[in-house]
Image (cartoon, rainbow, N blue to C red):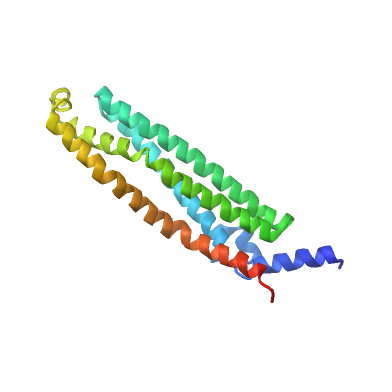
Amino acid sequence: MDLHEAWKKLEHEQLEKPANWKAVFHPERSRSKHPALRLKKSLEITLGFSVIFLILFVALFFMFSPWLVKVMIGIIIAAYIFFTWYNFITLQKLKAQLQQAFETSLKVALQQMHDIVYQSIRFQEKAALFIYPFSVMAGYMMGLSEHNNFDQDIQDVRVLIALLIAIIILTPACYYLAKWMYKISYDKYLNQLRNLIAEMDSPN
């Protein structure tokens, strides 16, 4: 066994400490706690929810008649199309790095996995801030459309003030709720992955 093969074997063994071979190639058959695989699972769940909500809002688009409600729902649909695509691309990049862990440097691959997921969720947190107000307006208008005099209600100053208050209150509330959910779903495993990388750097 030459030096190159010995180094590859060592790198493989480092990855096998928290996750065996079956866990890497068939994570669906394993309960491995390796942070890279947990991040992959979280991305798959996020992608699944994105698809579910996208289908839900498409259905809602055809359930409401007022054009203004349709516009608001259409904006939400466009946003979910984007986030679904973005999460899919992120997941594909992560899978590519999982494969790279066996073909190149393990440490570099793990660092890339960390950066890919970290940048993805931080971007989505900020991008969603532009969507929350439209989500609030869409929900508010869907409620108003249940009344027969929707066109008059939407021009009522009191209704508009109530809508503005709802946007001011619910936008930051949604942001911090999403941030908390990202923390549970991703940050824990990102920290574990960062610690694993640090352990690989530290001399034994």
